[in-house]
Image 1 (spheres, one colour):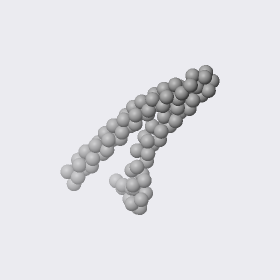
Image 2 (cartoon, helix red, strand yellow):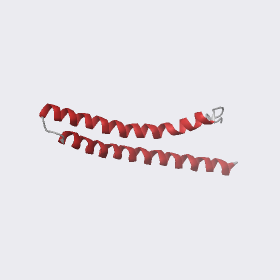
Image 3 (tube, helix red, strand yellow):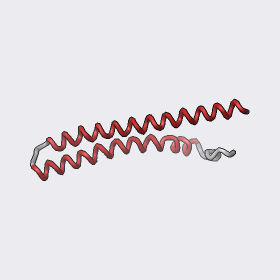
Image 4 (cartoon, helix red, strand yellow):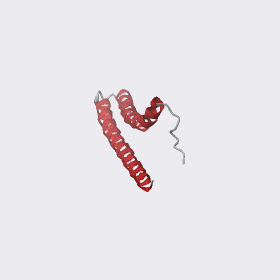
Length: 93
């Protein structure tokens, strides 16, 4: 079976390997920014001062960290599984 990464430049291979991790970082950033914006909107609408912004930032950080850790654990498990499979293939040859 031919490796789909054959023929790719080193830069393309590293970009391909980094893509899931960059996605996890953007997931964290997006959740923080979204909940900060919701908190800001609540402050503007209800006149609650900085509390909506503060709570939105804290909750957004918590949600973002949770999502990042879940994604990181999944990616690390996939990498371990890939290495185990590669080791099994190498033992057969």
